[in-house]
Image (tube, rainbow, N blue to C red; front, side, top):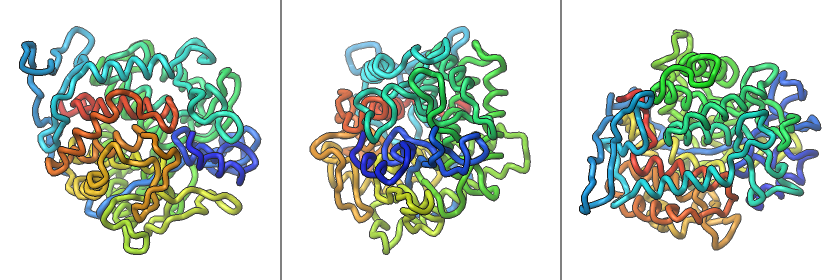
Length: 474
């Protein structure tokens, strides 16, 4: 994967930290390889997966209730334009693909088509989903293009992040069999301490190469399970109902990955100095709050911390107060923290393959809930990237906006897609929305490797076409 990964690996004894600087990460710093705390590699060395974000420091609030139910794109079966959903429910499926339900406060690419989403999904599935080493189920694998070999993660190995992405994609594409297989694979690899999935599994499916949970993966899985309950109901081929499995996953996240009842940690480790903003998913937490019956779980406080931290991370010292480019790792005061993993280990602090996801996760909170702080943050990244043009977005930036590409001259859907989703928050940035869609739609923006880039191609296209939805709003 990205070149920065290989540079980081030289600082470690084993291959855990490389996962941080790219799209295939997740570990943490823990003293043992027994699931007793933190993420570790098979050799016992620690690493971590991080991400960064940005924002304007506004208050979390509750947003505008029901804003995600803005309206449907309308059906078209004639020659006047592309066919649009929402496809009516059928027995056992409440939201068949495509849906094309457009949020009232967001804008969408001009003339988007569902065929583009289907093509991207089929390519992602063919390239990354496998039964090999999956214990009778299926898993998402890292490909040869995802920086494997010396300095990278094992060829065709699986990271929990990929399972989370796969579950989200499967539920929105109405692929229940794949969804269930991915979750059942996840259940083969519970962390001994937390019950959440260990972050890094070898290709053969015979051993953990890294232990400890990765919070972004865990929350993606939890949200996908909630959507599965609304999509299909019941339990499919799982042992318990989707809603009960989702609630259990949410409870495990709270008990292991929420610090002092208000901060999302990168795993079952860390504190106010080890923040990866790109893990922040405030729209998810609003949905979690609605189904979590434990009244001691203060999800609104977690949301508040999200926007407070984002606001702190955009400052005059980092010269990013107007561009929204957040550091990959920082402290709660917003200061970039290259020592987040401890003595002797260096973590990235620029806007890189983790940080680039932030506009996507934050924009959901505007499109679904009308949260003004989300829109304010997205305006910063949209103004910055809009001035560059989607086709010219590099896969790496210093916080001051200076391009530091890891793959000069190549395009990354992980950067371009989320930038385009962030731009959906205002008609002011319609041009960037259109450009971003057009740039990733062909499925060729793969600078960082097929697993990561194709995952973000599909998820970004789902969102841009009104198919990445909060089903609980309908």
